[in-house]
Length: 314
Image (cartoon, rainbow, N blue to C red; front, side, top):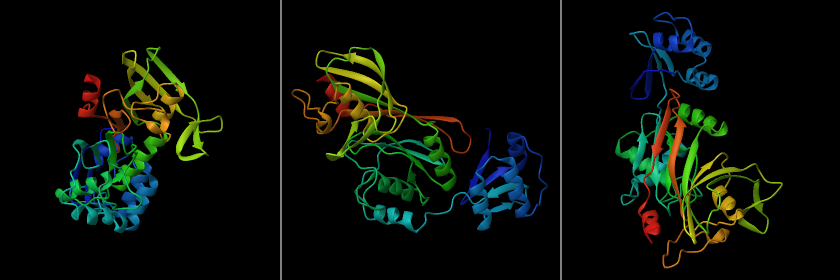
């Protein structure tokens, strides 16, 4: 949807005429009361009803003197989120990973292997969440950044953050509807015989090991697609795409296939000969998602990290 906007501090300004055309709705009179603007926005069905009603309840809907719709879309972080900013201010040496994409609604950070996305409590030191807050702090824009998906601590690659409630709602919905695509590079033991394949095997908890997941008939649906990129007698490189997002899904499925990831000791992998990696050889190469305001398809690409290049050269 073609929605042009202007951000003015905490306010999102939209052209009412353009919004009406995009929504196929009738016009709204300039100077309309906020109650009428709320009803008009609900009739347009461009934004979630719950979000519009919540904005109205806090005085977050108005019409500007120029006849534009103004929404309180960018409030500062709440008390819980502020813990991230407190932690960020206390970690001057924390390195913020590279930014792969950013606008007023979204942030994508390129998480390195060995860094947790979040901790056991908000504001835990050294996490990607705190790094995201530190990045926002440096811009003087303390918005409520929240991760939309996660990566294992030892998996590198793009992690998507929302910057406001609308973005969080839309991106969470996109995750549920499987509209967010995540593509990985995996280096596995052995020779993948097929050039491509689909692993459709349900995944559940291993009752004998609380950290492990296993393929089990009673588990949750899990579907993984892979494409072989390169192969030798000892190692194969595959591009892997998730259709579902189960915990450790790629690690479990590749192990189930008989090709555990290099360095993944939890699922039967081991270090490559003559090369100590220290974590599983899994990298998020690409993230694709619909923009939470416009719906435009956004692509965030993560370069292959140095450890992956070194492993392949070895």
